[in-house]
Length: 373
Image (cartoon, rainbow, N blue to C red; front, side):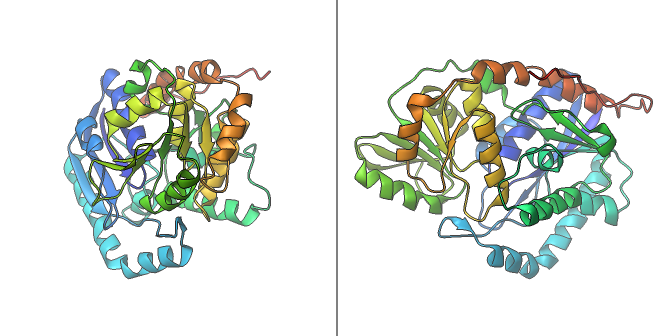
């Protein structure tokens, strides 16, 4: 099959999911004919993506979350959406033009905002599979944070809009849950890059920190100044920063670099991250405890953190107070064996769900029957 990817470029998770899916589908004999990535003004797509996706990449302007003081700024996010609306309309037409040129047999969307709009506005007839952890929040058995009914309704509205007229939704999950095929919701394992499986984890005496926005570094520095004895290696997206910024002998900041990050992840004592799904999954695979710090006012990350705690990934905190992690570590129970068992069932599930649309309309979506203990 000729397959085209639509990828949300904000953060690292959707990008690495696309890389992993590309590896799986090429190994199954399919072709990734093109990749379209939405990027916000002032935000760069990390170089590792273009290096590892191994397909022609087309970029377009897309909406993104605005931050203020380390948290999500809803007002600025909406204002940016309205102000840049003409640009986003051009992007939608560019997507349509590119898809007509490539003529794929299947489109796979990694939570790209335009996907549902494209299906509706242009009457898309090409089958589309939508892949994201966010679709798991649509599951009736998903546990949400307390007093979050409105926020859950809003994010589910966004997820439904991003997958309007899609043929199937694949909901990435930390752990096994029953699929809901009648609701176009198939629960599948996470998508991790092949490089994760090639790593040999060890434990060195430092914490690894990954942040979705460089403004969050202020909290890290504040904690570090009162705990200089704890070594910290931090990865951020600050465009004008050098590849490595040495703050002092026990704190360093690194620009996002795939191989360097994975090497640090394999050797760290624990990971501190802003509750991004992909980062937590990688740590669980390697047996690394995680402290998850949801970005303020970011409901999706609050869900990730709660779901991660339920799945045994680690602990959550509202701030980058790494003392919470220090207190938690003696009580952590390694979940890597259980997680790997779930993860390694993924390749067959992804391939079968894709090949349902390989000119065989009689095939049914691939699911498994799980026995819960």
